[in-house]
Length: 196
Image (cartoon, rainbow, N blue to C red):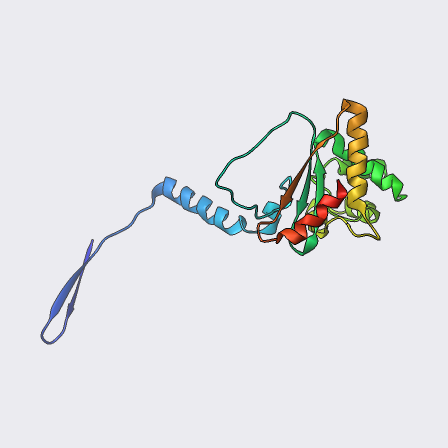
């Protein structure tokens, strides 16, 4: 400890200096905290989430009817971007079926990479190009969303393919869940009902 004194004409002050020691455990903890706070907000951390990041609405009540069937999810984010996912067991088959409808041919390497996609969020015609990229670049392109317009409605093709594939294997339709961003007005979510 050090004593510091400040003296002026009429007053004198004395400050006590205390030392602060981290020790080896504290240094490791501080390093981990620094790394986590540095890299957590980066997009590469969120790139491997199984679903697109959406601010879901908050509810004070919990109403949930979990069925044990196959689940497919349609995620809707701002600016009308739409994403589709289904249980891993069926997702590759659904993507293959819709890709064939659009005349898209995938190589064996691309088929292996297809199984790594957590959700579908792009035009099927771009699929071969996207599957040939590295994972980090691929997930940036997956943020574009599936076309869901009158002229190019690939979302409804995904839903129809999912229903037919699941019906063939389980004799029941998949449960479809809609995840919509909390900030979206209902009018922007309502148009999804036309796909069912």
